[in-house]
Each structure stands twice: as C-alpha cells, then as structure tokens.
Length: 324
Ligand SMILES: Cc1ncc(COP(=O)(O)O)c(C=O)c1O
Image 1: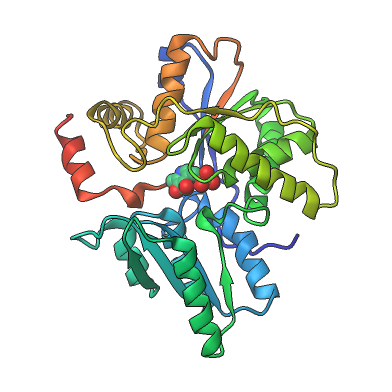
Image 2 (image 1 turned 45 degrees about the vertical axis):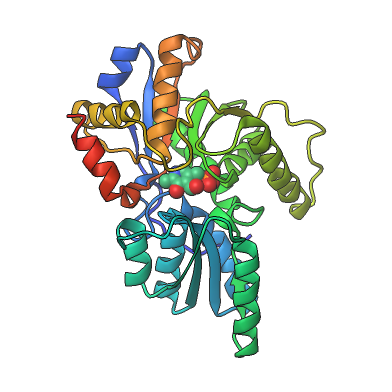
C-alpha cells in the first residue's frame, strides 16, 4: 500500500551500554521519539498510511479521537495542518483547567477540539461531526482511536522492515522487541511483519490500560483484518501475542510515585527521557522483568521509545520533581 513520507526515518538505534551492563543484558533503544517534533512518536508512522488512504479517497477533513493528552490527536492535527486538511478532534476526559501539553498543541496546530466528558461516547460524537461536515459539503475521513486499524498498523509493519535492515547493517539480531500498548496497532503491525519475515523475534507489549485478554482480542482483530486486506490466510491461532498487564499501575495516564522516580533515575543515569503514560510504564515493566529473570535467555533486547514527551502534564512534572 502507498504511504506518505512525513516522519524522519529511519530512526536511530542506540545501545544502552550503562544500563545494559547494570542489568546484565544487551539492551538497545530505537528512537521513534525522533520521528519529528509536532508529529513525534509512533503515531506518525501509522498516519503515513491512514492519511494516504484519506487522500486517495478524496477526503478533505480528518476526524479522530483520544484522551486529553492524546499523542495521536496531536500528531493528526499536525499532519492535517501540514497537508492543508481540516481536523476535528474528539477529546474525552475530565475537562481540564489548563490547555497544556498535547491539548495546547492541538489548538496551536489549528484543530477544532471537541471536549466531551468521560461518560459520553467518542464514536457517537464523531458520527455527529461526520454528519454535520457532510451536510456542509465536506468529505470527512474517520481515523479510529490511535489509528489502530489494519491500515494504520501497516506503519509498524514498515517499521519492522526498517528494523530488519538495521539488524543487517549492525550485524545483530533482536530476539526480543518491547513496546508500550495503548490501542494495539503498534503491536499488531510489528507482529504482522515479524510473522511475514519468519524472523521469530518475540514481541512483548506492556499494557497501559486494558488487561491482557482484552488486548489479545483487539490485536487479533486488527491482525485478521490485515491478513484479509492483503489477501493472505491468517494464522489459525495467535498464541504468541505476549501482553504483560502487570505495570498499568493506577490506570491509564495515572502516575504512581515509584513510576516517576524510575523515569527520573533513568533520565539522570542514561540521558534519555520517557513519558509517564506509555514508555515510562513499559520501560519500568521491562527493567523489572529483566531483574526478575524473565529475559535471561535474551541475546539482544530492543525497546522502542514511541515518544509521548509532549504529554507530561503540570501535575506529573510537579510530582516527578519531588522524586529528585
Ligand atoms: C507515546 C505512545 N507510545 C505508545 C503508544 C501505544 O501505541 P498503540 O496505541 O499503537 O498501542 C501510544 C498510543 O497509544 C503513544 O502515544
């Protein structure tokens, strides 16, 4: 499938010498937080496919949804502004007192922000916006939450191909790839390409909201659709979808002091910053599991930093500073 070229690719892979030595493993970091500034993180890789689809269908307005600090909404707003498309964002959560982080950027990038409370349905709101836009003669294109469908997930199938090329030039094979899982599309794309390549890497996802069962179901559904779209036969069973749901902590986008203390320690000792909602929890999970011995047979572990730094809220920053 055709794609747009908006992200800064390929993103570099860096060896975490200091931390790897401390943990007794070969640990690498793929900097998908370097894909851009406004479009930073994993979402732009998915949008390269979703927005291409929108353009091919002659659409002129992107509609999507997410939480208050949605990285996906911010990246969609940036892509829309870059391409001269309209953008409507349905943002659900506790109505904030500050327009900070991603929410500020959504506005700065010209998106129309529709804030709705937690009890309202994002899908119903998006449907109403679509109806209204169509009534005015626009051609809207709906991107699901996180662009996590069969089209968007192709962005991470392409990322896995990029990783393969980097493996060849670095002369190593990553037998374990680790990411945060929020809506499942990043995981599905990596899993799909890994399977197609017959590369037998283990893909580990650390859930940041739903439990393992729910994510296996979501990811299976995306994968089935990806195989279907490609005219390929889907595997009978997906028994190697590995989702760990033990590091969600207090819930989606909620931070515990130990998680923030971990992020601050990693930053000071290794020179890179994680976000509190996705990568901070997933990397905390990975390091804890390495310490417990769960990765003792791993030769080379690759953690993908999927961005999200724009999502640090005032409250999380204040709490993190107390951990110093
Ligand atoms: C920074 C960041 N990392 C990871 C994820 C998880 O990706 P996915 O939604 O494809 O599971 C997201 C979005 O949910 C994100 O914004």
